[in-house]
Image (tube, rainbow, N blue to C red; front, side, top):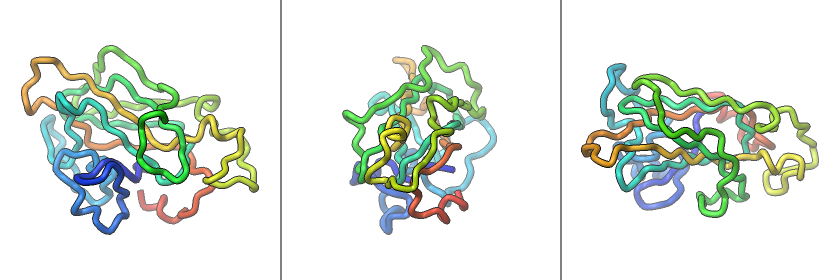
Length: 197
């Protein structure tokens, strides 16, 4: 499944089911990573408007979850000039407001150089202890009041940081077409929506 929110043109957090999603969406912008109706990028290595483009002033992108998640795998498709060097979980905050500062949690990927090929999918696996996937979900909890046993592993999104050579040209990127996740939603309020993405 995809995440559900990212930064838009005028707001720090736009959900992909917001009525003004199309107006907030822009080429090569963060919302491309949560757009469920966009066309696929070409299979050849190259720039694509339906991806997020890393720039010298924007080395990081954040994808938010509308509901708390426990993540077991993350899939990142890089289509031109790979460069994922850090992936960090964001702590679950209720209600989700798109705030990164003060909410960065566990680092799950940290390398000095991403050697992935363009058009490849980087797969990050998070084991049961770090993901919390095997923890019992009690009936008395809620998204607003997670049981203490689940709080440490409940995730509100991911922060992805890229590397870019200092002398890279304007169209270098790297370009990230999509980010997808495996795991489970804690106390889902909208179960049906997860079947279509």
